Image (cartoon, rainbow, N blue to C red; front, side, top):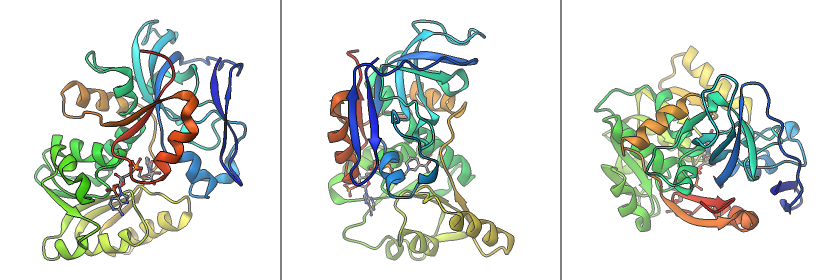
Amino acid sequence: MKAVVLEAYNPEERLRVAEDWPRPVQRKGEVLVRVVATAVNRSVYKTANGFLPRFLATLPKVPGGDLAGEVVEGDEAGTFKPGDRVFACTDSWRPEVAWGTYAELCSVPAAHLARIPTDISYTDAAALCLTALTAFQALKAARLQQGQRVLVHAAAGGVGSAAVQIAKAQGLQVVATASAANADFVRSLGADQVIDYKQQRFEKVLAGSPVDAVIDTVGGDYEPRSLQVLKRSGTFVNLYAQFSLWPILKGKVRALLRLGPRYTTLFVSAGPDMQRVAELVAAEQLRPHVQAVMLLEQASVAHQLVYSGHTVGKVVLQVRAE
Ligand SMILES: NC(=O)c1ccc[n+]([C@@H]2O[C@H](COP(=O)([O-])OP(=O)(O)OC[C@H]3O[C@@H](n4cnc5c(N)ncnc54)[C@H](OP(=O)(O)O)[C@@H]3O)[C@@H](O)[C@H]2O)c1
């Protein structure tokens, strides 16, 4: 089958288009899917730079953790049948998993898949996999009640744009950080307040009106600054998730000593939450924003575009025509 193969992380990321890559083996409980579209995340970049556990990385590897496609072989339980339109966040974003979604075929545990709502294209569905699931799980970790306020950083990005919409669907008040160029887009997703992070310090704008949770995909000094505007009873969700025991330990120690807000480091987990994402899409409470669609062969260019850190919504790779 055709696949894009990651051959090296350093000194430069090396991706090669292979026309004769072996087909994945369909294991018990898995569904074989013909991939129509996948989306670009930063997991290769983050592995190369030690943000994800590089020591576990396997090469060569087919990257990609977002899948939208058609079932070729269903699972033995009959949950999915040939021809079903499905999407998923797959575990293959993890450095140690060799069989990802930048390929014509992918074998995925049935429990990770959900059916694509009928009026959504494969390209749009691919934009609502890993990042939408991450946003859903981040809000779940934040344990918010209807009417509470959440600060979503980088709200124009893949995770952020999904988090704003899901938070609104849950009846939350949303404060978002975005640049002025993306403020209208973020408002159109439902954000109640948008802070232009290039012109204003969000902790100054929010001084005196602390929030109940922060969803942080930016990291660096955003963490201490966010903690300044978080209620003592609130939750900080660390999604930039540098792979290190320190933030995890820090969260545990803080919780143990009751040093203020809960602190959670979250890595997205493929699984049945994808069904909830599908329900939000079907209810028109979550919609994709696709900045660009490129061919699978253009994966290298697409990666560099996403690594710029300034894309809006998602960049999608078309593996075969819809
Ligand atoms: N823990 C997990 O399981 C998990 C899962 C998915 C992603 N992530 C991580 O989360 C991070 C974000 O992922 P993503 O896919 O959402 O990123 P993305 O789509 O690449 O984010 C790009 C957006 O971030 C905005 N942005 C950049 N710097 C900003 C800042 N300082 N303040 C506010 N907005 C800023 C940009 O807006 P402007 O152009 O206006 O600057 C742009 O729209 C990445 O580090 C990714 O690895 C973690």
